[in-house]
Length: 139
Image (cartoon, rainbow, N blue to C red):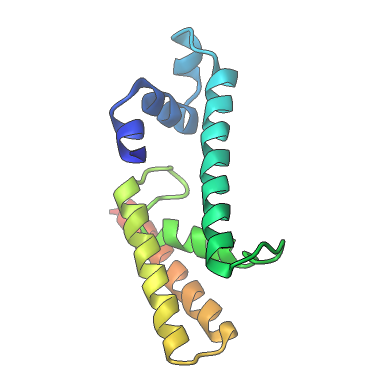
């Protein structure tokens, strides 16, 4: 659904324009403020859905239930191939990055590794992904 929204609608074109260069939106007569408002509204809806799923998984709500998951989110985006400097990436790459980081975390959990080792392993994978991205950008 999000793929269709981003890649096959005018809204998706505006989202990519917001991330890349806002001037064409202004020149095209499109309100940048309204476009940003809709992007943030969609992001808020996704966060609300994620919070609902997390609450269902933990069987209760706690304000510190997701502390540390922001690093995994950044790691998943980096492993998925999104370039932080150029902002180029794909939804499918990000999904693959989420799966890769999730499988790695689950495997380390099954091996009874301490959480500090798990975080360090994710950090090493992020560094490797950024190194590959930098090497790919120079070629």
